[in-house]
Length: 286
Image 1 (cartoon, rainbow, N blue to C red):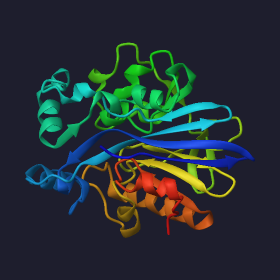
Image 2: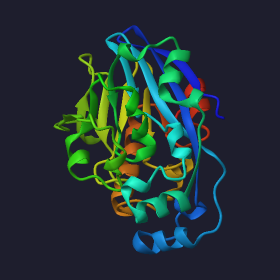
Image 3: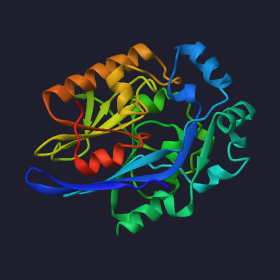
């Protein structure tokens, strides 16, 4: 449904190829994406909203790095189209996730098929890195039973809105401690020995939501996951309706903007229709 984007840059003088692929599409309540209130008032507002957004991508990032291949988030799977997909998570979860969201995904859009289309086999992936534990970012892990799947320890210990009944029975993530600092980000973890791919904590959407930064020779590229739905929300200090805290989200916005002021930054939210084009053209945040 959505055309992805790819770019080759250099890091430490070596080529790094970065792909965005859309593993399905989602439509959410308009007030879920663009909240008028915060907290419980925001939730009531989007539940009562009768309007849905246009189809939005579910971007997954694939990084071909000199050290290996990394997959950031895992996207959605076709089973989400089944009317009873959420039944195992209980009545409330089933009602909420079928009434507040709509999904569209074909088999060709799932992450294993997307990798194959790029000439990458699953066994070549060094690690899958999950930014947070919402199902539209985790369902595709079913294709990586033998691959390390990395999650921030804090996100794993205190998730928000996750549905563990949907995890594969074998799922035991590799937990990483966010014990470093990277530029403006107080909590970070280096994913490569070259220290050019960095997991940073960007809370607000969940208590310990993370994003991934690729530090290249010319600029930084940030897979922002669900910091916000669009770059415009970041620029205009507007928030989604399902944040754990808009105050915390605002602090993350400020940190990202400060980072973008210190070094050029391509900012790529996971549901922003324009993310792939910004990656292809290396359009920086201003």
